[in-house]
Image (cartoon, rainbow, N blue to C red):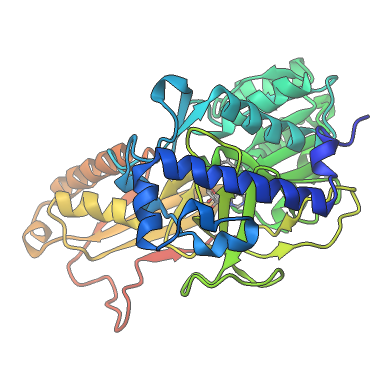
Length: 433
Ligand code: DLL
């Protein structure tokens, strides 16, 4: 059984990895400077020219890029190749008109799928495997990414997408899926359902590749027991291509970053200062091989630690810890990225005051999103049935904005506790980090 999909890259010497990074960074900076006006301006503002970047030691000279830049540049502002060279887009969920749209040339898709193939092989996948991909397909990168990786490894791929649990279990048992790819919360739910139906004996599963949201070690053990598998973490974000930026190996001791494609840095989120390995801070990525939508020093807002210690699996790629939180207020609910500002926009558009609270909790392993909103004094005198109509209206409006269901409760004016400092708008009871 092959332990690695691309051993020449995954097990390259540190000197070789560094040489690739130096060379590819220089070429990438030149590519974006020449082709993207927005970058050119950012670099000019910082007083840096492509010639100043001679290798990765010069990374700190480059400006950071944030999600706000991506939104400002929507949709084509950061495109670095002619549109006619692009073959696909993927996108994040987000406020209408302010989504992040990532573009891919065929070569970009190939390298993304290679990264996902590395993750599948690291989880024990070979061409004999049957990979059930139960991440969402469509604009979300989970389904297409793992689907492509599975093809590259030569596995039989079951493109189930998410949802329809009965059908998932039927395919899983009838076609003998051996590797399951989905969010950890969906894996836990599938595990529970399979246990309830007494179908564990019918499973051929051996591994699962779970990511896109935070999950704990307890959850890992629970999923492993329920499905009788080894569960592997996988990380990525739409902006940098999707899943496969990093992946776990058999050691399950952190996720190997595909450093031949992405250079990681950890920074102090307040000052932007680069921190040494081992210190906790915000993860920043520079993509050095993507052509259509390359990002230099992109701030992920994920708080992590990098571990350069050699790994027993033989890979020389540095490992990142599970994300330990975010440096912004983004929530991931049912795998969907939710910003409190999106909720606030809906409330204000509908004439509600900005007194609200967002509560995220878990029933089993499913996320529950609740929004408590204060009524205006005028609304408060409305009949109960009128209030319930208003709640339903808000549920619909939130669904249109976020793409997921949120339970809405209209509460009496002045009942949401006022804070003396920053308003406590989000109560996350899930304890995921
Ligand atoms: O979630 C890509 C993905 C799909 C990753 C399938 C893994 C598997 P976005 O929707 O753009 O992309 O969300 C990216 O999700 O910045 C993290 O905050 C979070 N995230 C992704 N993977 C993990 C993970 C996909 N393994 C955002 N653990 C990122 C914790 C994760 N958080």
